[in-house]
Each structure stands twice: as structure tokens, then as C-alpha cells.
Image 1 (cartoon, rainbow, N blue to C red):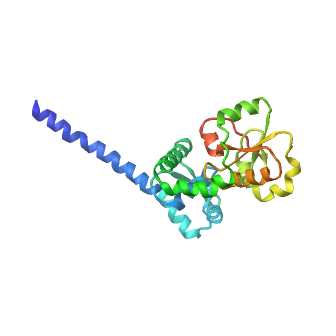
Image 2: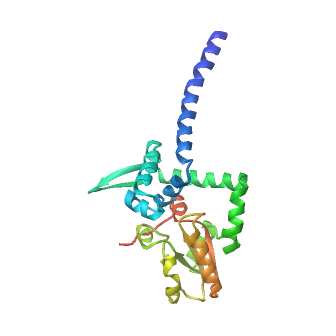
Image 3: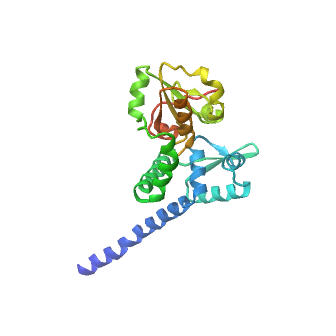
Length: 231
């Protein structure tokens, strides 16, 4: 009987170790700032290597190398479309949740993250952001103008219902599209996307009542909430 217990104990460590080794491969794939940024861009929609290289400022070769690491860890998947290979998240909701969990642990445990948030993010907007539940309620009551400040192609691929799409670079020249008698809720790519922070600071300086959404489009979509696309 004792031998059986010992045998079962020894054999049970094999599967567990195999799982931990596989999880470690996923963690290693996440362990680079460029790869986290690539995942953020892919959370907005599928992209080619060329597009991702342009958006991140990485060389084509470097972008491709990082994507292959993510692909081996099954964090992204590919589809050939004509001459291009398009990348997308493999398990969108789970990967968005994983990145957000990593952010929460980092904010709690890494002093440098708190310093950067205080020196840059909170310097632009220290007000408490609007939660998804609160935004849903306000949208149903027709109390706010929802502003998406991501690039046009990201807005077209998917956005929150009823959102007005004005890329941050065009905001100053399109202020007439924003009513000044309603609160504006701005959002962008996620909790560390600086676009919405800069939009809030710019609009508040011009007298608008404006706040940020607590995260961004990927988290909204991953939560199973409705989205819209543009032609």
C-alpha cells in the first residue's frame, strides 16, 4: 500500500511539471516590452508584420522575430491573405485578461510603475476614471458623448457603440464636433495607452467636462459588451 502511494506521488509530479514548464514558456514569451506592445496593437484587430512594424517603430526583422516567439507560445495565430500574413490574438479575451492581470501585479509590486504613473499619466489626469458599468448606465441614459481617440483604422475595425471617432492628432481641429453641454468620456487602446490621457488634458484645458474610461476598447470587447464596426 505504501509503495502504491509513493508510486502515485512520484507519477503525479510528472504532469504537473509538464504544465508548469508550458506555462513558463508562455511567461517567457510575455517577458519583453516589445512583445507586450505588439499584443496591445493586436488587441485592436488583426495586423500584418508591415503594419505592426510601422506602428511600433521596430524594424521589420525585429517585429517578425518577436511575433514568431509569440506564435510559438500560441499567444498569436496567423492567416495568409493574398501576399500578406496577418497576425491576431489567439484567444482574445483570455490574453487581454492575462495582460491586465500582469499590469495589476506590476502596479502593486513594482515601484517604478507607480513613479511613471504619477510623473506622467496622473500628471495629465488624476481624476478617477469611469468604470465600464458606470459608462453603460450613462450611455443608456444618453448623458455622455463617447470619444474614441485611436487611429481611424482601429476605430473602423471596432469601437464602443455610438462612439465618435476623432484621432488624437485631429482633435484640436475637430472640437466643433464635440458638444460642450455634455460630459465627454474618452478611451483608447487600454489602461496604459497615453492617447486618452492626452485627449482629456487637452479638452479639459479648453473647458470641456471630460473623463477617461477605466481601460479601453480591448477590455470592453473581452468583457462581452457590444461593439460596432465601420465600413
